[in-house]
Length: 352
Figure 1: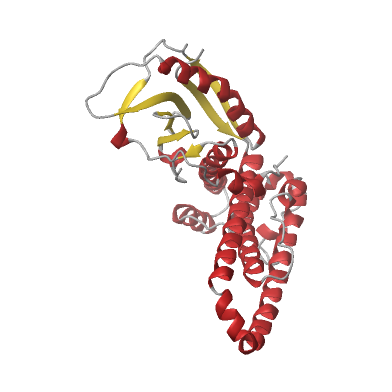
Figure 2: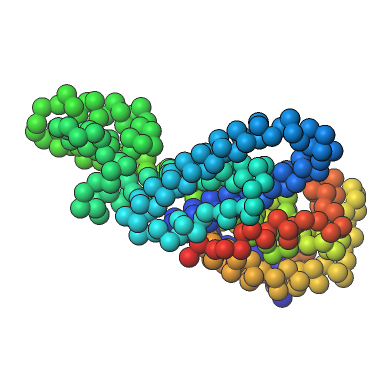
């Protein structure tokens, strides 16, 4: 029914960003648990002979870990306060990975590291969102405010991005405003400073969204059971090509080409061939029909996580030939059962 498909992509700033950090946090916890399990098995024999000698050190380590866990949870709870001001507290709470059951040291440590990294990412996202919405607040959020003291107009404006880093060009403009006498020029400089700050915040959020989209697309494909070529964080920033397929597809896979400048993505079925081969196959049409039937599920999975894809072009199967690509230029996929579904299990809770 369908050949190549082209879509225009966009992302919901809140849902997409929070979905992406939730994905990364869940994956970090999962990887930490897997490493902890491998470490346990590797050193089980050593533990049997060194148990008594390690008792004191283990108790000290557990105490330090509990302190780090408590601090990380307090840090996360403080971010919830800012999220409440933004009206997205429930969505932020949903990004928190579930703590491990039991008192396994390595698993607890993996959870703490993931929670610390999650809070660091959330802080940037929430502060950016707060800075963009600061004019909607009756008073400026404490996280964006400078210490109590008389402040100039330039200082008040800079406080919106003080926690996010101030570009040199904005800092220079603020200094120029500081030394400008009241009057028409000062008003123009104030307007320019406000506009540059807003532009900087929008650029920062756009960068965050582009990186989030990469994480969401990759995990959504894996959740749907596809084998996916590694997707870099810059795919939706710089553009590029990624391939994915299901086990059992043989020589066929789907090529996803991202044009970041145009904000578009093209999907088309390709077939791996040996150098110099150009034979057509009756299976090409079936491969395109198969991908067509599965494409709506991908759109739905992305939509739930805040990434919207609007179809702008859709060709019928066979309208253009399936692209033949030298097998050496395509990623190597395995037809053996992998761990795709296992990796996806912790990621089922969605941001609403």
